[in-house]
Image (tube, rainbow, N blue to C red; front, side, top):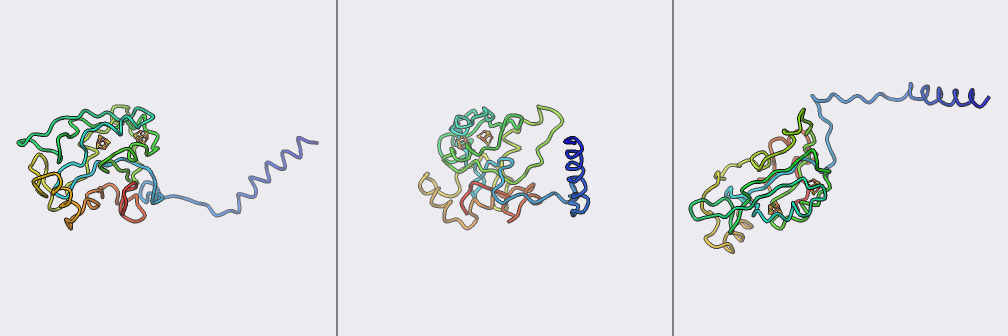
Length: 196
Ligand code: SF4
Ligand code: SF4
């Protein structure tokens, strides 16, 4: 008797779903829009003149509970400058086979170099391609930016440079809008973790 009752309960669940509205997502042609603060693919941001915000300090790597980030710092010189200040990231990698998208790395970053976009299409068919390099993670150059290495364009000293970066109309927020974010954002900013 109990088995029969159980069967009717089970069929009841099936039957009730027959009259519910079908939700069909036309993926990948119309990807669903993620929540504004969704934690997706990382971005390494730039200053308004194109120099990299990352100073190769490795704090993000130390903060990562999944050991997903690998950073090797290198020295800037007057002839070869990639970031304002002494150091830049000579090597920067994020392994998306390990990353759990917790966001602790972006909290640890002292320069707000590292933020997360809404991009979630990160599936790859081999493990090697899941290791994203610095070149893949860097924000694209916007109009007015130069490809590093080049001298600091916003001020000769670090103090002048950072004040210049704050007052320059082309603030770094624009640099954080990656081209791949167009399909995956609600507000078009494509980023989380950065104050607006
Ligand atoms: S989001 Fe979390 S797991 Fe992923 S790289 Fe950052 S700290 Fe590591
Ligand atoms: S992303 Fe931020 S925390 Fe990580 S090495 Fe660069 S500056 Fe340091």
